[in-house]
Image (cartoon, rainbow, N blue to C red):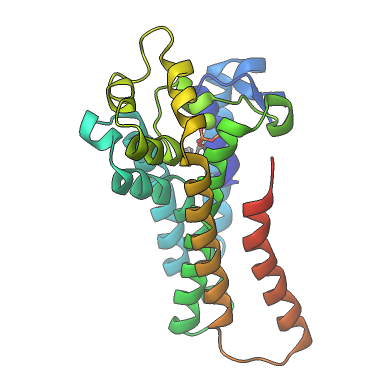
Length: 251
Ligand code: FPP
Ligand code: MG
């Protein structure tokens, strides 16, 4: 519910037309109702969370909501130095995407009565899965089509948002820097940036970084305490498989 609430608000901020292959709520019903729908889901999530009567879990998920807003704000209000910084991009990516998954994984471990050690591994799994997921999302924004993604493609660059593929491309083509610096604002900037990106290893290096995080997520599962229970083994295999699926997905 928190995830969907954040997407409803995100589509207002991004002025999106489509989401999951159909008209986005803001496009169909207008911004005001889309914001309220997000608020409604968020409040329902709070009610459900409170009913768990676990203050640590409430605190983790409250932090997630704070991080979602922080990540989105970081993306919207960059200085030119921050726009060119991989460190800033990765921190924003943690807040925007990986915090929800990492803290949710940790919350599940705590609710299941697991040890602090297991809850940290669960957090590490979610964090690295989330980072891998968003890195591939940022690749797909360039390589996917609107119909394959079910949402607009090239949305980031058209909004002046700089993601990993472009940051890696700048290392090979410093000529890209002024274009990025002015937020792809001049006519022809987007096409020029795409041309540089196409000639660089930006997409490939982003995929490699995503794979590194997928491998770290997988290692967190392998580090869980030994357990021969067949259901546990099946669940762990599924979690490891998920780390590869976020890499190989094309939508
Ligand atoms: C999608 O990013 C957006 C997010 C992962 C987070 C959005 C968070 C907010 C709008 C803050 C408000 C939060 C709550 C809890 C109501 P994207 O635009 O890169 O992905 P997309 O291509 O799927 O749109
Ligand atoms: Mg968006």
